[in-house]
Image (spheres, rainbow, N blue to C red):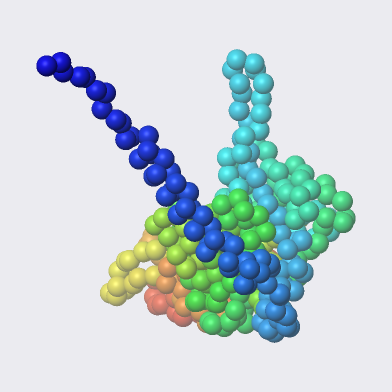
Length: 383
């Protein structure tokens, strides 16, 4: 018998063709039901008609008008340092920090924080319309964290900010901040006065007194910018935040405008604060005298020809061979004085030429006498 070899019939191409046919059929069905039929019944998609907005709420009108009115007064301050390229010997100004500021007057004076301009090789001020100018420092007060810089901007760029008051602020009233947080210029935030008369110790050891605390969002870059009331008036200069992460935590601090309005003219006129003084060297001390223990702020020295000297206040001295302690300061205009910080806080409320009443315990060999003495404050000779 002869065997016959037959090649087996392959069904693979037919299966592939069948699969493709099914796939095409499924896709056609999908397109039919997902695209063609819906469009046939419902038509093609189009933008929806716009619902009329209606008028803004009164509070929104107030806020938008406030920003529109005050924003041109707020500037962006760049603190730049010179760096040399040692390969090309080219020197460039490189930004090392940024902050905010605001136009004080039409002479080009800009108010900001001292720590914003501290250590700058070059200062650049950018206005709301993006005009930029280099600035020079006119005056600075590290103890108040305030500085004045000046730009040669045209009058059209100079919109002095409206000035308000801070001694009549109430906890709970609305406040607004405009600044440049994280470099985002012309940023508006809103909050309330959270507390008043806060004290804050800064990293350089300076203690700022009487600050306004608010929960308006203040972040790095807001420093030197204005805190405003609902009338758009300056009521404070934003200076610090309380936050472990250096981001807004709802606790911001501002220098009250009454303090700003007192210091800034001094910085413009003299380059430094003009401090009122009694002309004494004070010392916290405890001592025993005439069988009694005494504690207080002692006038260790009264300088010749000073207001204190002319008014008859006495410092440490010798009488008939006995050491007599200087007068102990009790109060200034009925405000109790127990520490040097109390004294500094109270004396800063007054200006050169003001007459104040001080109460002291004055010592002599025979007795201790409580005295009230009037004197006129003089200008400090140091800066």
